[in-house]
Structure formats: structure tokens, C-alpha cells
Figure 1: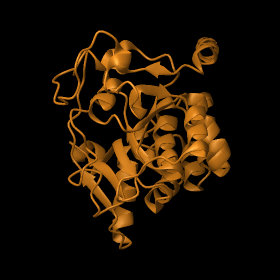
Figure 2: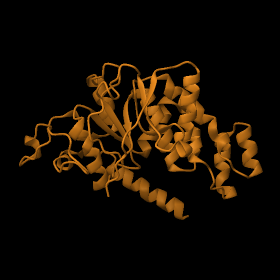
Figure 3: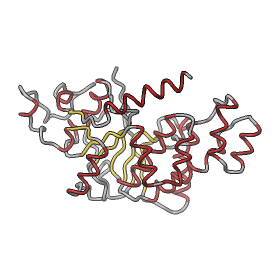
Figure 4: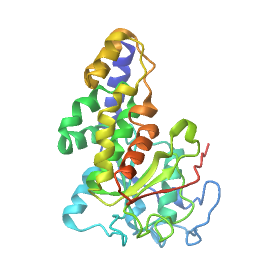
Amino acid sequence: SRHQAKQVAEDDVRRQVENTRHDLMPMAMLGGNTSDPCEYVRRVPRPDQHALAGAPGRYLITPSEFKNSLKEKSIPTLPNGIPKVIHQTWWSRKVSKKSLRLASSWLRCMPGWTHVLWDDNDARELFKEESPELLTMFDTYPYPVQRSDIFRYLVLFKYGGLYADMDYECVADISGPEGIGSTNATAFVSGAPNILVDGKVQNTLMSSAPGHLFWEHTLSTSAYNCGRMGEIELVVRLLVGLGFCSAAFQMRPFLGWTGISVLSTTGPRMVSEAYDAYDDMGNNDVETTRVRRAFFF
């Protein structure tokens, strides 16, 4: 089928570029996408002569490199225990120049942070190793964005750090006491710009210390939220009503079902629900913060 042919082609691309580490210096030398507030960035004849040439965030490294670095040395942390590591995800390591330009903004403004790019295979491997009980659910999500969503909660639970969507541009260091370096909390989620669509928070920029219970709670909420899909097929509604989410997802190809709500199963509406419930349980170690989302085309 056309879908299977596309899957094979994408798998071939992933294999070809799976060990690629991207040098962000050339893009960082171009300056900002919409502005250049990080004044320490200066043009020099050769990138290797730049003051940031040896910065931890110079390269967009692979998860394997990241894990090896954890064995060899500890990642520096903020005062509240958040490790200085940025996680981003893409379907493969074949990244467009536009996305690399945006990724380089983190080097310009937060050069001391290790920068990791996880592809789809890396995300699945993380579930296989760290949360095998959710692997079937991960595999049977009908939309790639759902796997991308749920991955970010697990990677923050396991490793901590900062997660940012690939279409975000960093225009200032957000790791200070007024940002995610605040000692008032150990986890941060960005406030939603439209609460009618997303709920209170969104899942595009998030940060925490490793092992934070909020992500465990969020993963649990996601696992039970297939009942909010709003599908009309009686068989599917029966399956989700009984909590057989994976079976419901597997029925989709046979029923031609396309109305699943990503927002409510793995996306910002689900995270907003988890956030409210977590707060209601008397926890006060998660803060929301508003950020500007930048699109560069």
C-alpha cells in the first residue's frame, strides 16, 4: 500500500542518517531568525575560532552519544536540580536548514546546555527500555504526533532537562531564576495561548528535574485517556469504555476511523487535565510560564 511504501522509504532514510551529529555553529553564526539578542555571538572567519566552538551545545548529538556522556561525566544542573540538557525530536536525523537554524538559537543563547535530537526509532527504544508496559500503546497510536507527544513526557521523567519543539526559537537564556531556574518549582510547562483549544497548558516547551512525579502522573493519564476520543463507532466506544485502548487503536484501519482527538489523548488537553489533577492532589512543585512561539519560514 501507499502507506507501507512511505514507511519503508522513511525507515531507509532513518538508517542512512541515524548516526549524524549536526554542527550548529554555521547556523549560529548567521545570527537570529527574527532578532539577535544574544550579544556574545560574533562572526569570525572560521567557526572553530569562535568563542562557542567548544560549547556543549555546539552539536545536535544522538541519544547514544548523550547516554555515553552520562557514563563518562555528570551533566551540570540548575540549583533546582534540572539538568542542562535540551531534548528535541524529529522523525529522523535528516533535519531541514530551517529547523537547524531554529535549533542553533539554543546554542546562541544557552551554549552550556547539551543538545540531543531523538528520532522516531530512538523514541520507541526509550519506551522499550524504560516503560515496556506502555510500548503496545505507543506502537498502536494511529498518528505519529501521538508518539511524539508521549515520548516527551517519558524523556523528561527519565533524564530531566528541557524539551522544546523543533519550531521554537530561543531568543534569551530562560534558565535563570525568573525562568526554569526558579527554586520555587522543579517542573515547568508553558501556559497555553488559547485555553479553549488546549486547556491551561501546552506540551511544546517543558522542563523538569529527572524522576519528577508529574510526568509519571501525565503518562498514567494518557494511558487512560483513549476514552476521550469521541468516536461514534459502537465497537470502538465499547473498547475504550472497558479501557482496552490499544485494541481500539488497532480497530481503526478496519473502521476507517479518523476522528480521534490527539489533543485529548496525548496532547495539551490531556496534559492540562493531568496538571489540574496533580494540583488538586496538593502538589505545588509545577509552574506554568508563557513563552513566545516563533515561526521562521
